[in-house]
Structures are given as structure tokens and as C-alpha cells.
Length: 270
Image (tube, rainbow, N blue to C red; front, side, top):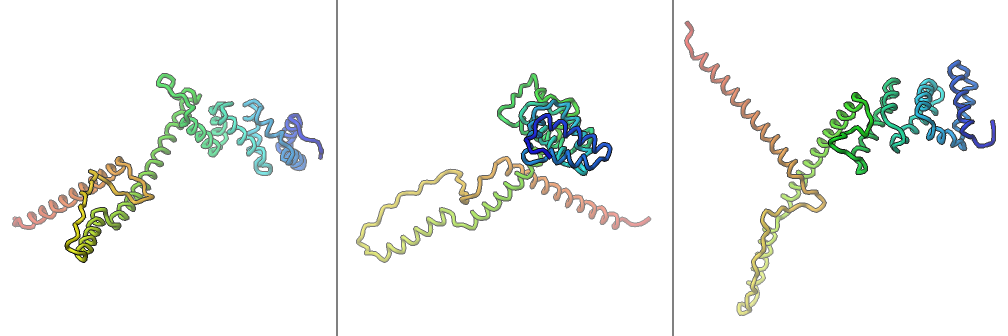
């Protein structure tokens, strides 16, 4: 083993040796080449994958899949570098998605679509009605998958947020109902003040009490609990109304069936 630091030329040679040795089941040479690639001081592999052409990444992806059983370093390094370059905007995602689809790399494809989704949701993404999502540089099938996946994920997140907010809002309302309101507190305070005033001298002047200032439609929220979104509350009320309507229709249907059965039994047989 050499003691000097690996260079880009060394990396290219080691990759070629690993490719050839694994292809013809020469595991001794394949192991040696893999050890050269994964040495602690060998940052040249990462540097090479960060600058090599996209066609080379496609070739190394195929080789990494073939060598993955005994030497998984290459495949992991290739996919990691490819994703980083897509995220940085150096390479388009279309070729990587095509390669991942051809070789069954579903996780790799999912990570690419995640990068695209994060990019589309960032402030740096320029979207116009004229160009649409053409800046993503996807083919029609890939764009369709991206839109469907983005919509499904958005619906899932909305559902999770809806359920969470309703649970928090219900807990807050329950806590607010258990805690005394301001009116009850004021009533108790007035009662205590009246009791204390009776024990004092009748000649003492009664204090003048200013009227309480009320705030219209004021909502008392337990500290630490978020104010629920009115749209979520409205959606919950709509669902409750739908359930009540279905229950009412079901009861009416049962009553109609019972009445029909009773009339049928009451009719004389001919």
C-alpha cells in the first residue's frame, strides 16, 4: 500500500481496477482497490465525484450497484455526491431520476424529489405563469410524479396539522372550562369585599367602585395553548354536521322500514 496521498488519477485507476476485478470475480484485487478508495486520508474520491461529468456518475452508479454486495462504498459515495450536486444546482435532476428508475433505486429517486420540493418551496425559486415548472428541467412523466407526490405529501401534512390543532384546541377549551372565568372571579371578589365592608364602621364612607370594562367577543385562552385556526374549527363543524345528517337519515330510513313492515303485517291476506 502506498503512503502518499491519493490523487484524482489514483482514484480513476482504483475505480477501474475495482470495476474489472469485481466483474471477473477477482475478489483479492477488488478488495485491494476498495481499500485504496476508503482510506482515511483519501479525500480524492469525494473530490473526483464532485467534479466528474454526469456520464461518469451514471457509469459509476451501475458499477456501484454491481459491487454493492461486497464493496458498498462506491454506490453510497456516488449517490451522495450526485445528490449534493443536484442540490447545489450543478446538475439537473432528470438524468439522475432516469438512472435511478432504470436500476430500481427508489430511495435515491425519493431523495431527488425531496430536493426538488425543497427547492420549489424556497424563496430563491422563481415561478411565473408563463414558464411554470420548466426550470426544474424534468420530462413530462417526472414532472407528473413530482406534482402528484407534492400534492399527496401536502395533504398528509394538512391532515396531521388539522388533527393536532383540534386536539390542542380541545385541551385548551377543557382547561378553560375548568378554570374560573373573570366574571366568576369578580363575583367572588365583590362578595369578599361586601363581607369586609359589613364588619367595618357604618359611618365610614363607602368606596366608589368603577364599572368593569368588558371586551366584546373576548376569548380566554389558557397560556401555552395556541389559538385554533377558525378554518379548522369550521371544517370540524362541517364534519360534525355531516355526521348528524347521516345519522338523521339513517334513523328516518329505519322508521320508514318499520312503518312499512307494520302496514304490511296489518293488511289482510287474500
